[in-house]
Length: 39
Length: 528
Image 1 (cartoon, rainbow over the protein chains, first blue to last red):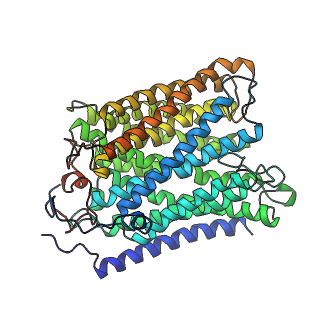
Image 2 (image 1 turned 180 degrees about the vertical axis):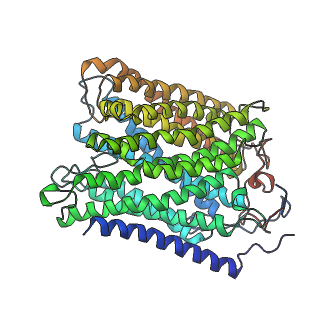
Image 3 (image 1 turned 180 degrees about the horizontal axis):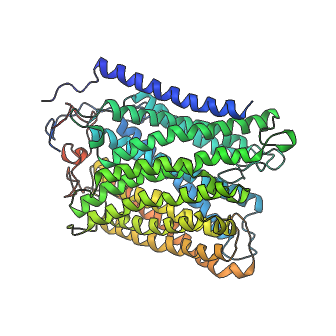
């Protein structure tokens, strides 16, 4: 039933990929605001 | 939900002890506890500020605080309550509970999780250090331009505020990414995303809210910083700027921010009521849809904070109806909570009392919100004490009562000890009575035309202000009971059962001892 609870390399890879996507999204929203108002 | 996992008395991995272990920890439970303790410290400071304000306002003509001090105190009260109490407390609770509820070993990125906490702490300390460098911010928590310009706020309080808010925003964004990834990638095997316990779902949705809302604030703050430090004119009409842009940017963040504080609170209430009604939550799916709907709608209502700025009739109508629309999913939630209680085998321990108190007070706050949503009414009572009464009914019940409910609910899991029910109930009743005496009269004051954010007022407002101050002191001082109860609980010998609540059925209660061991689940739970 239950195995080791350490994250697998695949889990880690997917987690990092998800985090990068989210971080890029945040930066993109921020940059959009700055380009709109800081020109 | 059937779960297979290691037995409840599994031998935990050895846990390091001592101050150094806490300062260097990456364990989500310890970080959660640190968040909660930090939030409570800032809460005490903010409550003290509130009592200073109410002392100044106990009767007209008081000279307890100078106008300059009053401006700093109410500005720091709001900022502290929003950014250094409500949000960290929610994040702390979620830090401790979410990985337990979804069967994860820890957060997805434990070191980033620790960094989030330290950013919060240093951001908070930086904000308060401004008192030692010429004075704190004095422009209100939403700091409208041009009040934030050097001309109106020449000392560095606003600059400290901008830098510390960037740190606090960074902390929140980092934490949100961590929560989303943890929920997406580290759930127990077999647990679908929308099968997560409702508090975890609320935290998950709330994290997206933070990610979409905070960049707007960060951009506004960056422009303000440039205006103050480098002489640009983004918000100065004399240099071609526009002070109204600040309001748009701030409220595009600020209104979702209200829900950032309240959505997890909804999750807490949705976890507690089924436990004490001994019935499954009524309408889980509709709760999830309602939470998501509120999150989405919160981004299209910012204009209702700006009716008096002037906008086309179409804009006024849009923001008015959009604001009213939020009452629909919120009503769904209230209906579901009542339906969950309906014909349940209810008992009224402290978490349940605070939950019911939350529903009653939040509904009052919701209704006064609907009143304020009506454009002509809002224009009439804008910036009066009616607004103060409204948002305290929403936020004190939403963020404070629900988080007290959550704190009492999970305290046995956090500490392994039981708190005193008698003290808990006393805390609840004093809080409810004090809160209503403090804030209900403020509706009358607002309708009578008393403006907010003034250190003195006309004679006709004297009586209700006196009652408001008496209530504020009862409410403020009763919070000491909570602190005493927590400390007494930790020091007591009343060992808590693994699941002290008969109706609680999420993983942290059914599959973990109290307190939860260091490496929560030694083997991964599997949901079938």
